[in-house]
Image 1: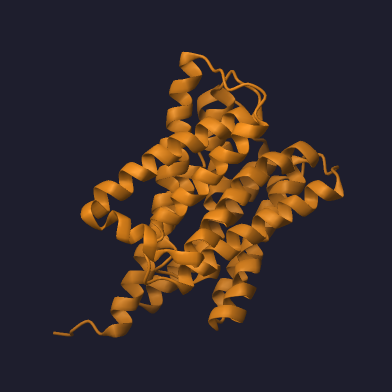
Image 2: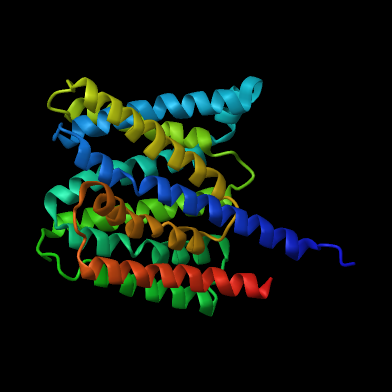
Length: 294
């Protein structure tokens, strides 16, 4: 009878982390569907209510999990936690700006560079090397994202493209910081991010008035789609290499069009389905070889 050693425990920890990140990506992927169901159209109004309800959810989560240690958890995040919150707030709010200045196609393709940026940052800051398997999976997933948006218009401003690149960089940096500070619970850092989102969007929103129906959807948008997603990501990103975390997060890109297709009959087109299949093949390929090695 064999006794599991340190390598087995590391594999289990890494696998658990990637499963949590996959769950976070699945939760995030519902965002497009929720936006399609909303009547309100002002992006900053949506961002305000989304950030507010996410703040309420995350505050409740931290208090429920930490109880008497909650204040200690908040203090422990320090400057790294504040930076993580700022990065995620910038990524969340920047997405609104990018879509207003450049095409959806440009935005999605540029955001797909996140795993590569995370891999480079993790190599420079953490010394994490990229194995051939993960590198091939990254390449295949980027080809898949490119196929997904092949039929979309490619026009857009350089400023919008730069903002999209900044989003990918901010998300990658947040992932690497969480990985580097994996001994610290980073859920309170997500709370910092949502508070920043509330502050910025409250100033830029044209009107904060929404209908009762929209308010219900925004509760789900903030508490479930953003709050739960960030909580899962905060835990999972501590357990696995940064490059693989951002690679798995591309699952959001695949599932997003699928939910809109299933529930509001918005046909994503053959290119989106083919590209999504390529991304899924890349993720399964990477995970499958991991399991075989284990």
